[in-house]
Amino acid sequence: MKIQHRLEDSRRGSFFIMEGERQIAELDYDLQNGILNAYHTGVRRELEGQGIAGKLFDELVKYARENNYKVIPTCSYILVKFRRHPDKYCDIWFRTEDEPLGAACGVRPK
Image (cartoon, rainbow, N blue to C red; front, side, top):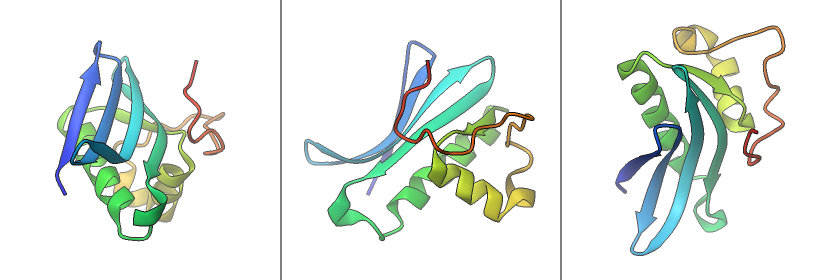
């Protein structure tokens, strides 16, 4: 499975996997002022549990590090990954007092 990346108007981005003409997985984010707000991760139901979301997450981390971006883990999946290994992601984790709780997964931030 090949992970592709698109960035529209320098603000909205996505890591995604296509199978033929069908998108089977995505990790969506907004980018502003060097901060990636990762707000949604999704994998088609029949493909869940195969590590696909983890591969998308790894691409996000790699991309953030290569570009010196910080990541706000608005998506619950990404927040769990960060919380499980905070030392591993402290270089990219954008933390604030009112940081998201991951409850907004799938909801595009305004």
